[in-house]
Length: 302
Image (cartoon, rainbow, N blue to C red):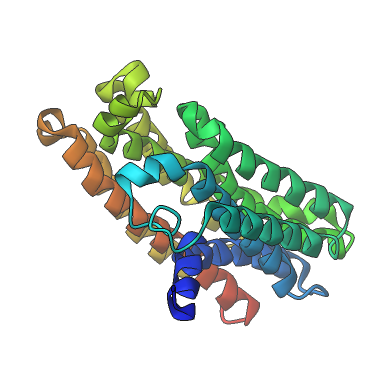
């Protein structure tokens, strides 16, 4: 008999708790971007946070539901293949989480509800089919990451009756989308051999490893080029500028690795390292936006 503790830990693994924390942070960035622009808030941040985190958790659970055959071979330790959580339990949990998350969106307004519902549907469709469609799957994953920022601001903007203020989430959302998409492309390079075995039409398998690296480099260069814009155009301060400079340094190092001679010798190994570097860049970049917004909200920066 499976112990309660083991079951709970398996459920937390199923919904990827560490990823949910990151999702909460990005949602808070969007929320605070609108708070700073309005200089007021009537909607508790727990409302948009609940929507995004619950929908994301449901999305992770449904992903494991559809991935069970692949996980039986590649990740037998996952909750479903290991037998700790049944496939039916994962499906029921996913439905409960997604419905609960979308229900919270009603409290913000109809636009927020529609946005949350469409994103929830997209998550399900991604797990069911879109993830097998190569670059389209990469784009969807990256969009969903950026959408959490947009929704954090949208929920508050609609509640306050000023939907136009959602535009303040635009730059951090674009920044996140490009950085996440570049990491997705790098991940497809790392997974080249595994995708060949499973006959996944990933970007490198369609256009080659060199061209895929070139696309990743272009996306990363765009992130660096865009990084000063929040400081120059929309009032982000010195805290953002300093932290984003660190992000740019990590990204620049990643670019160097992707165009190095070492990449030509062992692209998958280099891509694995770069994927880790970009994870660090995403963390610092998120921290840059969040910290600067908090400082501005507290009146510590003018």
